[in-house]
Amino acid sequence: MSSSPALERKSFDVTPDLNDPEKSLDIPQYRQDAFGDEEFAEVKYKVLKWWQCGLLMVAETVSLGVLSLPAAVAGLGLVPAILVLIFLGSLATYTGYVIGQMKWKYPHISTMADAGEVIGGKWGREFIGGAQIIFFVFIMSSHLLTFTVAMNTITNHGTCSIVFGIVGMVISFILSLPRTLVKMSWLSLVSFGSIMTAVLIVMIGVGITKPGDDVVAVYHTDLYHGFSAVCNIVFAFCGHAAFFGLMAELKNPKDFTKSLCLLQGIDMALYIIAALVIYRYAGSDVTSPALGSASPIVAKVAYGIALPTIVIAGVINGHVAFKYVYLRIFQGTDRMHKRDWVAWGSWVGIAFTMWVLAWIVSAAIPVFSNLLSLITALFASWFTYGLSGIFWLFMNKGLWFSSPKKIALTALNFTIIAIGAALCGLGLWVSGKAIHDNPSSASFSCANNA
Image (cartoon, rainbow, N blue to C red; front, top):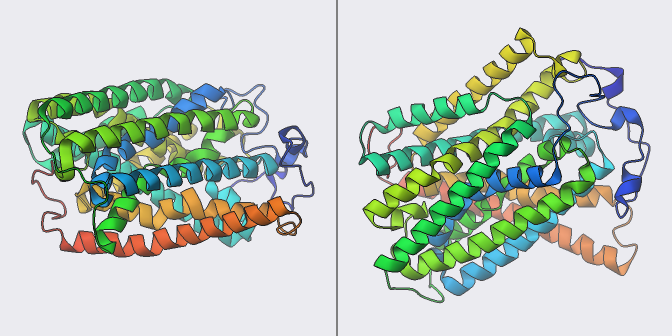
């Protein structure tokens, strides 16, 4: 891998004030960011406005998460599910802000792997970088799986599910070809409108037909089923792994807080309303994804309208993954900003390889809720919660008990790390048991998975 003195890994010798973003940006030029000086670049990355970044965050976070929540409410009961949703959503807002603080303090960070290098050196970079890539491949696979479910629903299983998966993979690959996020941001508008309309149609549809009436305030469940529901709620807030990559292409990194508020305001409101309404009328037999709970005709219409967000959200996550690999290969060279055959060929090759891997995973684990539980346990538990606690403790090393406020924040971040560890351990048990016990989860099958 090529390197440049401008991007040489050096110890950070400036300690910015996290409470003052202006000061946090007053740092040596060689630690500014991964893309360097773009004044005369052919391809410019750092052009995102805050609202474009926010819509990208909405597009890559909201889509599949909202589809799993009514089933999570059915697994916990109305009151516990809403309390868990508000708690985990509020915590995700805080951990997202901590990721922003990490970027302001170390502006060269553009991926979770870069943050891993800051806190753990070379080994931290490679370990977290590898986990990040696997996580994104799993997220991409969950979107391919949902595309397959949607097409089986729309066409009444018109052909082999494997064929639908390959079609979804090809479409996603083509949409992944732009190299800058600003070009992807316009797709996020389509994605947002798509999922909002689809969820609204399902809410109206189940409200009219009322397929279930066995709504309970508190559902007496066991640890296995209850924690499966919690995993689906956690998945609804699993966009954090992409936050560094999105911030890296902002015109002004300080604007990330506004982007984060846009994301959390939209997703919390949509999640609570959709989960409550769909569960209220669909009852305890609500499906996951939730679009299947409506009548057959309404479900087909809803899935048809939701197809853009099913595809685009996976594409945005995939883009961040490709960018990480591309940066590892070309960072510090002028090829980062070129449009020649080597640059484009490398980008296309990276995208194609990762979409093929994602399709293999989606065909190997063809049950939506089981795949979400596995992704949550292995990765979202740490990328959304645990790692942010570690970042805060690292940034405030030596100051943990310096004031009452610091003591409270120290306790909070240790708790966040513990929550991440619990989600990981129990989630692996839950997802492993579900995949093992589900008789309909035959891998690489042509069977209808709708």
